[in-house]
Amino acid sequence: MKKVWLLFVLTVIIAAQLTFTSAFHSASEHCYVSGTSGVFVSKLNYASMRATIYISLSYKSAPVLLIFPNGTQIEITDNYTLDLFLPRSGDVLGSYSTGTALGISPASGDYQMLSLSHNHPIDVDVVTLPSSFLPWLDDGIFPEYFENIDVYWFKIQGEANIHIDGYGMAI
Amino acid sequence: MEAALSSKVAEFMTALDQVKKYKTLAASMTDFVLIILGTVVTALSVNISICLSSLFIGKYVGFSIVSSSLIIVLFPAGIIVAVFWVRHRIKSITIGQWKNKLNEGAPGALELLQNIQWDSIFSDIRYAKLGFFLYEIAKTLVYWVFAAALLFVFNGLVESVLHMTINYVVVMLVSLVVVLVLSKNDLHKRYDQMGRLDWLLWELRWFESEFRGANFEA
Image (tube, rainbow over all chains, first blue to last red; front, side):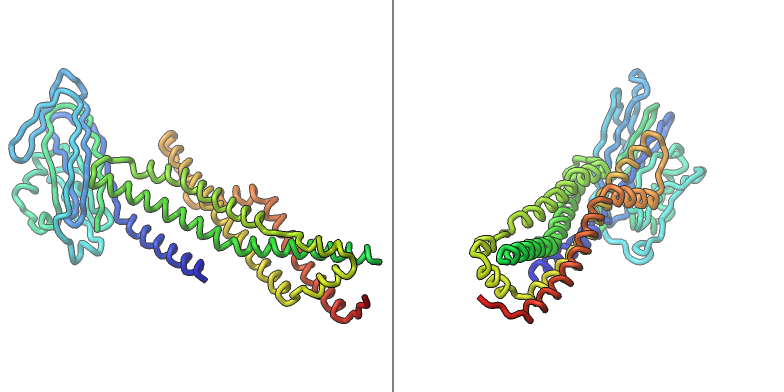
């Protein structure tokens, strides 16, 4: 009889573990950039996220410039890795929790960027037209979007291969 | 006459020993499932720990690679432990204790027969049959899951090298067919054993009825 209870307990534990496992999400992006581009790591605010950004220079002789939103600039002359953690910063209630997708596109881009939803609460992107994309972010044209998401971004100038691994937990 | 009786009783007691083994095998089904579930809990716990440490400590490890490795290492280990545990339990059964008594000749043989709890034996055979069936299903299911996991890993390799994907339904069906083909002899053997248990049950019922109706004279 004790074994039957043990079977029951183990089954419940497995069900709970599988449910918990479904809270983990991953996202990745790999592309070649030249000129000015934007690297974006975004998440719904109830998610915690870690992203590792690998920047491989196409030509070691041609340095690449990273420009951060606060004005800081870093010139890199060799391969560069950036590891960042975006902590949980709030709750999303209402339609976001029922799976409504939140999509933000560059004004003249062909496809959607920052595609976030309850089923896809973390996202990583490289935007090739940051000039048309950034005003959306800076000017707060759609403040209701940005209340519920966290976005980390920087601009990159030069030729490089960018690989982003994003990994997060949404609870 | 006495030698014939001893021989028949020896044959009968051997069959009862076999029932004892079947009953233990049936009872081991719970242990088997417990060990497999314990393995799954362990694998998931390790997996969750790696996911959490990757996120909060920052050593990013490819989620799919870790999961696949865990399935490859932990799950077979669990199956091996479960199978060996069942075998160990069956091997640890003490059988043949009746041999000394049978060496006493006809009186010993009659004493053995008189001490048999017939109802308990019939119940044991029925229990053994049911447990036997469930054990075989559980074992086949576990092998199926393991084969499917291996095929999914293989599918991942095919996808990354050749950029082709095998349909999930096909993976599940192929793994089931592989398991059924590989365990064909075992399934056949178990089926025969279940048939023998049926036969034994009827023979024992007949023997019991004859034994109860007979008058023995020492």
